[in-house]
Structure formats: structure tokens, C-alpha cells
Image (cartoon, rainbow, N blue to C red; front, side):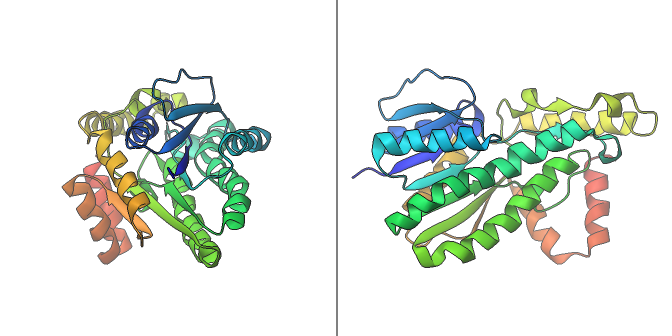
Length: 268
């Protein structure tokens, strides 16, 4: 029997590529999007869901269960980015970043877990980032949302293992997707005398790295491998060699050294 996979944020980017790959491999995939999407593959179905809205999440999960009767795998992918100086972030920017990336992940997990516990099995894969391992300058609240996912996922793995539920997280580096074009830029930071020049210089580098990043199928293949694994790891770093090494370096060098490395790399 084909596994039923629910993927949030599946209308574009990493979510879309992952949903299409899994559907092509025979999985029954339900992808979520805030707007109605056209279904192009036999095994890929779309559900309208806003991960920031608990009622919308409840309705979306209920629709997948109504059609299939179970959810075997949840891939929490929905997310967005806001760039700017931490000092100048508005309440709306902070709320939007944290609600979409972190709270949305929590809400979907909370809605799916009762079904998985009842089944006595299930798998949850949360998308973090290498920005959830190190605080990226001018992407501070993005990093904060991903750091939160890291802690949440570690705790969740411990809490639900006894119910037969496997929990993993993927820490992607830079990928060539529409994430770059859809990023929100802080107008206040761009105009700031204190941060403006440094911010513009840093963002130019960030966007260059993203646009020349890995192909999304590399992450999709990793998610498929995690689903197929009998004993999946808690963490999977999916990044180029330099970014992969940076995760290792973060674990062994003093904290102020890491800050110096980040300032040098991001030209802050």
C-alpha cells in the first residue's frame, strides 16, 4: 500500500519539487498551498491550507484524512524569509516570520499527531536550515525561526518515539529556487544610515549564493531517502561542501570565532 504523504508549502520551490518527486515514485501526496492549485500528476493532490491559521490547518488535515483515512508521513516545508537588521524589524515582520516558519510547523504537527498515535506509526520530517544552526546576519529572525524548529524537533522526537513515530529534520543550505525572489526586504534597513551599506553588500552576496545554489531535486532525493530508511537520523545537512563544513566548524570553534567568520563571509 502506497504511503500517504502530506507536504506543506508544496506550490513552489523545495516543497513543489519534493511533492512531484514523491508522487512520481508512487507515493500518494497531498500538498498544501494558501491558494487553489492545478493538479498535474495522478498521485499529487492539493489542499488549500494557511499554516498560520489553526482552523485552516484543522480543515486541511481533515480533508486529507477524509480522502485517504490516514497520513503516514508529514513533511513540514512551508516557510518564508524576511531580511533586515534585527534592531529595525517591525512587529509585523517578526510575527510573519515566526508564525509562518515556526508556529506553522507546530500547528500542523499538533493536528497530525493524534492520527499517527492512533495508527501506532508515522513519520515527521521538519525542514530547518543551516540558518537554524548558526545565526545569519541580516537574516536574524529567519535564523530564530529555524533555531526554534531545531529545539522543537529534538523534543518532539523524544516525546513521540514511544508511539512508533519517527522524527527527523533537514538542514538545507542554499538552493536555486524562487525563495530569493519572494524574500521580503526591510525598507527601514535599506534606508538606514547605520546599516544600509552593509546590508546591501551582504544581501548581494546572499542572493548570489542562493541563485547559484544546489538543484532542489537534491533535497527531494534526501527526503525520499529519509522516508525509505528504517532508522532515519535526527538531522540531515543538505548543502554544498563549504556550507556543510561550516556546520562542522560551528560545533568545534569558540562562539566569538564563529561570529568573526560569519562577519567576514557576509561582509558585515
